[in-house]
Image (cartoon, rainbow, N blue to C red; front, top):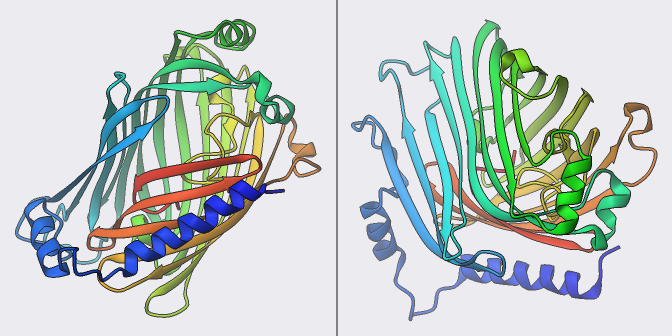
Length: 383
């Protein structure tokens, strides 16, 4: 299932993560000095309630063969819209981005607003990317054959605001909007052929209205220690709403969190996404992302329907350090009735956590899939 080289990489990554989190070498600056540097960047591990938004910024370099040398940055903001409201969770803004020497850039953000003693919740998530990437085609057979891999540059904008109202204890209903625009520029000959034969073509705009049902008892959304969440999201896309195609998607997610000790949390997540209608190629369900099925290149496996499960153990070490380990599996199909009948793919990995702000982690994950690996740098937990 996993090759020797892949297992070796996973073991080495585990050792490196442990070494980074436990090293006490004299040549390194002590923690008090690092805390001082981080405080200058807004990285105090105590919330400053006197500020409207308690900001923190953490930059760092990176290199990939596709994008060359670059710099990444994580930005975290914590705030309370109403300082007299001690019922609602602390609101948060998490942002991770990068820019590289090849002109590639990307920006991902999540914003959680808890209002009127948690009577209202306003959430916004979004992505802005201009990055080299690959397309394999639709379905399991297309994704497993690396000969189908074709390069293009994705110029993408995606935003999803939603407003939820509490109808009873921990139960919310609401409406949202999903707008997505993607242009596949500079495609290889094979990619251009794929897009010409796919719904939507090279340039796709999708716009839809979403209905939300949510039951949520998590104590802190970006990094829950206990509680559970069950969510159903139905989205209807149509030309009348500003998109190119008429189709719909339904997402189901159930997550639960168990605090095993003061420093350990066991988290479990189930996720399913179903789509029907004239679904564009970029709106098919993806098996592989920074949130689930880590270890697979995002977009390699895509189809009409997917189902995934993952179990993650999170452990806080001393100071700001933490580690995680997870196992997961997922499947995809062009029909809901065939989902799970075959083609189950594995996911396993380890991760390092650095608590930049109170309970707001910058995460670095290394995931391993079937003949595939992936690194992920994000703000907040995967789920």
